[in-house]
Image (cartoon, rainbow, N blue to C red; front, side, top):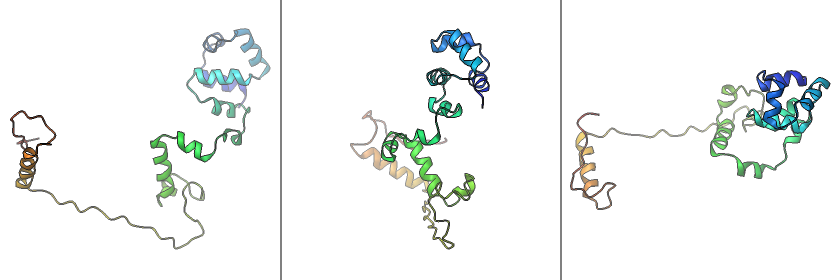
Length: 167
C-alpha cells in the first residue's frame, strides 16, 4: 500500500491540516512528506494513535516494520499482559478439535495443538451433567432451610422468603 492510500484510509479523508493539528506537527511538514511519498515513522505512529489504531500495525502496513520486529517480548511476558478473555479464546482455538474447521485453520498446526500426522488421535468426550428438575415442594423446603440458617444471605427483617407464585 502506498503512503497516500494509507493516509486517506486511516484518516477517512480528513484534510492534511486537520491531521497535522491532531498530531501536533506543522502542516507543511506533513504535506511535504506526503508529496515525497514517505512519512517519518514518528508521524505514522502519531497518526495511528490519533485515529485509534495500533502503531505497530500501521508501521507494518507502511513498511517500517516486518512481522518479526513485533515479537519484542517473550511468550511469558506476553502471557502475563494478556487479558483473560484473550487467553480463553486462544486456549479454545487450540483445544477444540472442531476449531480447525470453525476458524478456517485447516493445515495450520500451530493454531490448534493437534498432531496432524496422527490419524487416530484420541478425542475425549466430556461427561454431561445430570441435572434433575426439583419439585415445588423440594424448592420450598430448600428456601425454608435457607431462611432458618443465621448466615442466610438476607437481612434479618422478620420476613420469610419463599418462592414467588409466578415469574
